[in-house]
Length: 427
Image 1 (cartoon, rainbow, N blue to C red):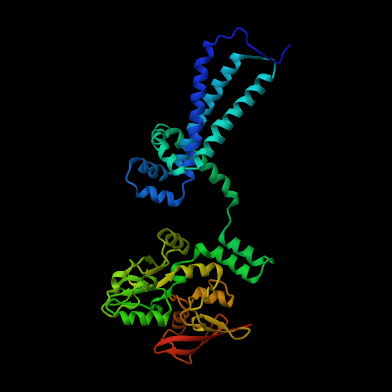
Image 2: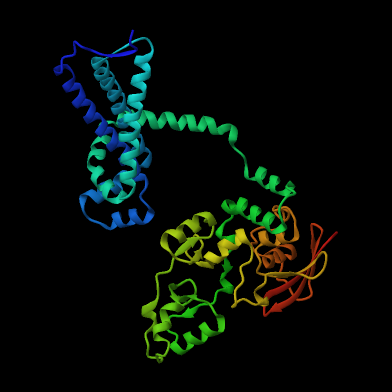
């Protein structure tokens, strides 16, 4: 007895329609697979380009990508429905042509259908679509928008179900920031620099802008009405590449001057209207998380932001370099000098700190727990502010204060402002 034989009583008319339907279903499967690759291969630059276009196809693509979960669910539901129908129709065609013995029907159908689906329904359309995702996403946008509406109930059920399964599966894998920090502390492998970098990465999402910004008193700015010769003098003296420009005071920041924008006009006289080169300032709240700010910097392609409080008053300035230093440590270049250091270790347990250093950075430098001074720091944000909280008065040169096993000595003043503080940590 033959394992597989031709059905001699086959009538050609009985397989024409199922065969045509199978071909159509295979094409639909290919389109579904191709659309998935087309949409989810688009780069951020591709999406920005589509957003800037006014044609309806581009706007449909942007609309579909605004809810990627629903888009993916729609494609998956449509693809699986088509594949199920394809399996049924191809099985019917094969069984009409051949007569099988025993398990060979299952084996033959499985091999043929798997081959057809993989080659024509998955591999070929995905390879073809990946070469030009923008063009193909525009082509697929119309049918997919209709399918998104048609298959919404099934897609909604799929999204909700997968969301619940994902939350359930992730419950046992949750780990707190504190647990990660403890793991880094007890790890014995890696250099000190690697340990610091790991600690910076872990605390990155928990750090606020106010903790790393340059305070208002340390901002070097330009008056809006300054002469061009004065502008060039400030640029040469400071070495900064981006300088905020203000009107009446720093609460009236009108723009940011990029030094590179001045290069074509470097020889101009005082009558040059340099204010026309100002770029729009970017304002951020002082309690914004630095990981969110980094995303905004990347999205807007800027490197500097003005930090404001809830009343809109300027509190400080933060740059991309300040954010990156939270992970990789101090970044120095040819324009930096020793005066820019916020602290220096001069003995085994003795330091000289710049009074403007943030309390959090000061605590990390001396190796204390982050909440070591939480009971006395009050509303202070800098080491100078902590001195005021401890003394309950304006600090003066020569003042000696002590708290939590740390001795503070006001070493130098800059007018009424505390400049340098000597710190001794009890062994």
